[in-house]
Length: 151
Image (cartoon, rainbow, N blue to C red):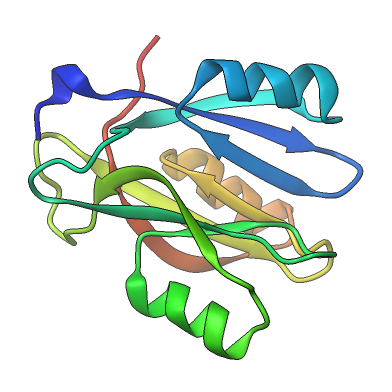
């Protein structure tokens, strides 16, 4: 995929509902920040808004009363819909699905907090380890591979 056509994956976080919201569209990010009770949290990575060679869908799954979660795995998406009560999935962006980093891509780590129900995603091994060691999160795995964001 052409990294010059990638865009920032924005993340908002709602402290009341423990819900993380990802979007590659600044206007959507800003709307949730201004009107949806979300706080600007971080710029996570770079992704694509259309499918590129070697990329897979980055799915958003949301069910009422639960924080949304994201995956690059069709199997995980299908399991959530067929067995966990999620009504469907939406493609948010396109990421690499390969377990071997391509074009300087980095792992997008997925963590989960059993107490709050929060799903946390990061490219930072430091953040990943901190959330596991002192934040009560467990390591779920690698959701996919993204381009690192450097401001």
